[in-house]
Length: 527
Image 1 (cartoon, rainbow, N blue to C red):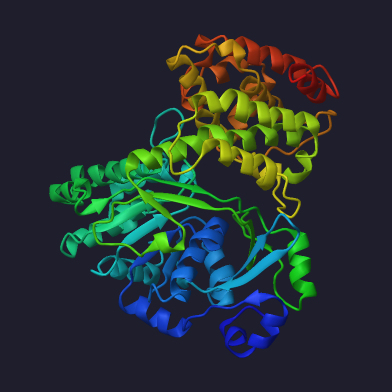
Image 2: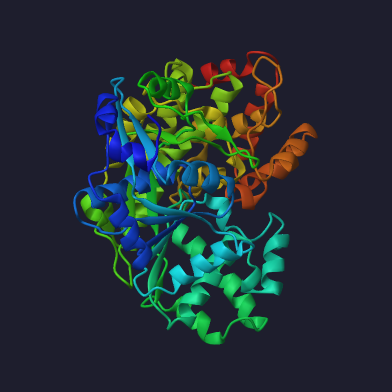
């Protein structure tokens, strides 16, 4: 079978024989309803969206709780729309990788349309603008990664593309945040219509970051005469435009060969991944773990789909913030980053294999239970201890979750401030002894050692993409470690004002002693 609408409608027995669940709703009717009265647009058409957010839409449609689907847009890699959305009739084969070795397969059809969020494409731009003028539109959501909201470089200057957008106005918007501002200007012009603009990205205070970026672009346009002052009032009025905060959690690794082979063995064709010109590694299938969490501030001026019926937690902003802090600064993300740094140095290519390494397990457990839990924020709707238990005992060791530490190592410079800096600041704020921290300085030292571009045995290692990669690797090779540690943009504070800088430098020096240094350091410090 091939993944397309014709096959889904006419080869149901074959899909059932392959263990694949099919949509239980009328796909054509859903797409027609969406075209007439669009309710939900999403920016960021990658795997976390398809495997998680898309599955939420499917569940509502299957249960008759929604009539419309999602319009998925990509702001970065338009090739994804052509080769993954259009080529497969906007369908996704979702493969959940269960800890017991079984898989749960389902064809997701909750995406009504794939669009390029590209204002240089007149047809796509016109479609998007028309959608945003629709009174029925309830929400725009995002999974574009944290860097998608950034308008400025590390030195504080505007990115050239953003500066050009501000000077040239909404008609020529190119940056994702400029495109969002331009579409909201369309909605303002259609009668100041309400909607929610919801970041679902895995970053701290995501709604605040999104709102700040949109307002900065909009303010420049007002100043430069491209929009009226009332547009800013509209964006700041929560009864019109809301920017809810959220916390998301689901590990969705890149498509894995073992999953591709299992699908091929089941008679499913066309599942080979592609690599786009922008280096996106993606396939018609998504492989992901089963556990998933989405906690959203319940602030939707034009209403919302009943996503609580699909497992989404709705609550107030304080609770979202506590859930996000719990996960991102204590219970999952720091563990992921720490083990990925040493996993890369030690040559691991699977997170689950790392969890068989006693030294790495000691690092993860100390980081979560010993150093993190004492300052964790308890959101009440989720238990921090139970969350870490699930991460350490079920999620990370899952041998059928083919996640790669090299993927986790991507963009680490954008993550360490939240994943480690927040806990350090909590220790300082609560008057706790920074000298008791071992796993955190080990993790930071491991990252610096990773930036040398060699494995623990000294052979060359390819460092994962990072916006500061070249700059940081140059500093590391020049021995300018304190320049990195003193950068509050990276860590959220100047680490050289704390005793941790000396400890990190000491660990880093030991990591450079020769082959086997990473293994030796972990064993000596975590004995």
